[in-house]
Image 1 (cartoon, rainbow, N blue to C red):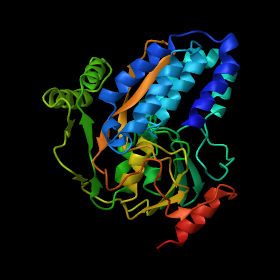
Image 2: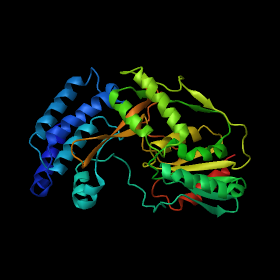
Image 3: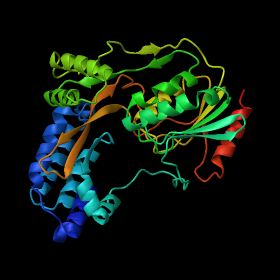
Image 4: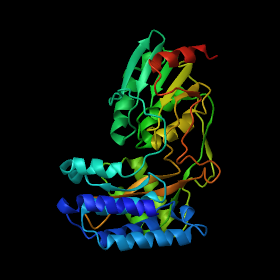
Length: 368
């Protein structure tokens, strides 16, 4: 804790002279009062073993916040507190206007927080475009940089436009590096090409709190929300309203099987290339895909940001802050955690490996 509080002091002294002001104590208290009742992981991560430490940690940060008025210094305090939970699906974000206006400050703040102890990252330049590229006569590359809702139409369109090509190429490489997730709906049209056998899915259960219910009701009012999503949200809200202070499982099952009618002849083998920045919905995709007999994972461990999900945005008093918090928990827990571990590749490809695609295709074609 001393190290964390030292960070706050350093940043505070560095930025207080020219920073915008906010009521940090008010924002800190609002943060704590939003996370405690609404974050799906709170009761798992704050328990009898660490409660005394947690309360002391929180109290010291609250006292520190009382003497801080600069937005950047306050942000460090808020981030220090959320970092206790070691879940990137729980965080305070600086608003885009602030980040755009003070990019150098944001860089300096980020330097204060140590990153995971990992080997040097790859220097590969990754395309930000969802695309299909023919690599060889019998192989193609499917680049999927994101599973945000906006990407679903692009993915579906590519699958439609390249339908004959997709069913003609026995070897695929799906490049999932840098994919920070989005929505599981984005990749649904891709699953039939991967499918070989029923896929076992562990559902999410939602934490029923007044705050989470209100957030989902706001989502329900979105006129652009597809009808199927509205029906699902309505059923979740109803369950939550009838079971406040508990987890609710919309599926009513500990697991379910996804079964399709047929198995495509091609692709015969699929390599999925992942890295430390493949996370969230990208990891859900991996959990589904790796059950296929066609699929081999290549690269390094994924990010490990999935145990608590379905993130929602909560307001804080300072407009430049936004709380992001997961409101659901996977039924994989506690037996099969992924957070801060990631999903391991079947074949490790070091970041300094040149011509990764060439290496992967060679290995892919040698597999029987």
